[in-house]
Length: 196
Image (tube, rainbow, N blue to C red; front, side):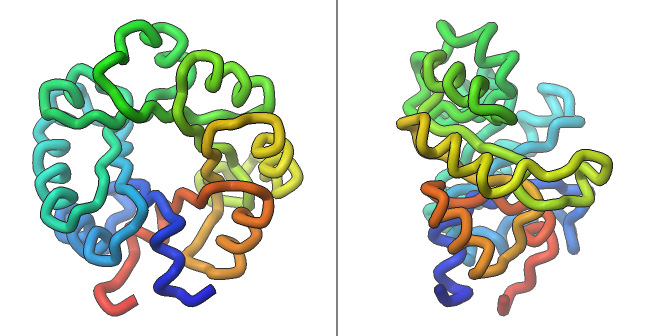
């Protein structure tokens, strides 16, 4: 796998506090590389703050024809005409009947039982992690590739690996070999350069 092929298997995940440059500039650089999707995660923002930022990010994604996934605030996504939402599993449990406007619904899982539950609740994809060691969860050992493979084998929805994944062709090949549809990359995307 060549480096340019990484992006077709990658959901870029935002974290504006890790951004190498002003956040919207970084979003534009990421979108120029044409990832599979861009997930606006920013969990510390209020709903109102998130809505303002989401409008700008949706505009950039549209410019580069990169699908945008909004996170947590499904009412904001509906107001902005975004039909893809990613919800933490507790929110999916609570609001599963209020999501008919969405063509794609994602959630994060950390066990096979959660993956099966997510599928039963109507998730159309899930992120499974964390797979590799990551600074975001220094005190928690990674679940590893065997966990990822188990989730992929026992669910029918697309699974994306998350946690400790860099823009590294070998890592992407490993997760694809486990049956994952791709990987989610956060830190490396927020540090990405124009010419990567």
